[in-house]
Length: 118
Image (cartoon, rainbow, N blue to C red; front, side):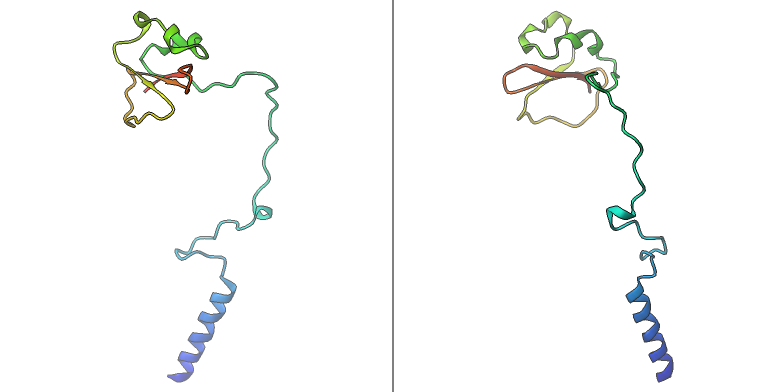
């Protein structure tokens, strides 16, 4: 019995030292260093082109995008949908997504930074 315990202890210690390359669930461990990661593909040069997020939702913000970069007061109230909110840099907002609500994000100078549905 003692010989079995010694053999079992040695195999457990050996497995612990080598790590066996496996995680606790029998899966191969992820790379641990940058050198072990696969190489990245080539980056595309976008030069001076403007990169924008896709426009989605039903709040009508597509027609108001030209107000981005302007003071919030330049956005005519009559052009706004029934449901909208203005979010400043320190505003507390809910995280619920409402595709019919326009969210106007402004900076500390009350200049429109973005308009999005949500």
